[in-house]
Image (cartoon, rainbow, N blue to C red; front, side, top):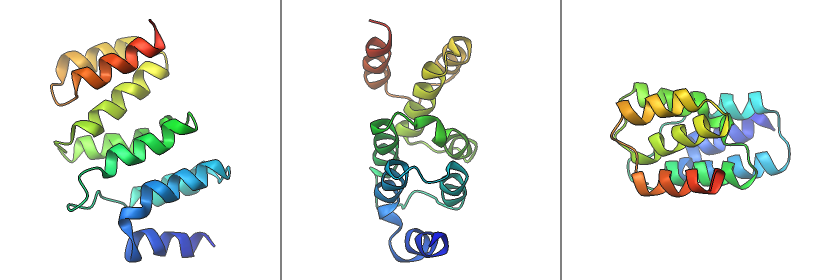
Length: 125
């Protein structure tokens, strides 16, 4: 089954990855399988909302941290997508690593301040 899911999101319909990951999280699929699935995924160039959808699906079940290594990989690949950086800040804030979050915000200008501000307010009003 895992191979079929992997083939589906990698070859047949990469744009469906956020929905597939969300479904897998709802079904309590093993995190290592989800992370393995994400390792090979790159956001489709014709799907500008890919990262935002992926982050939103993980946020629905409060498991955004599962995306940490994938988002960091996108950052290392010099992604210019603000959603990559918004997701990383959310993870750093949620994990209680305020120093990491603060340092990230000071050294980075690719995140969306309105989105991050709203998220931070919801965590510590």
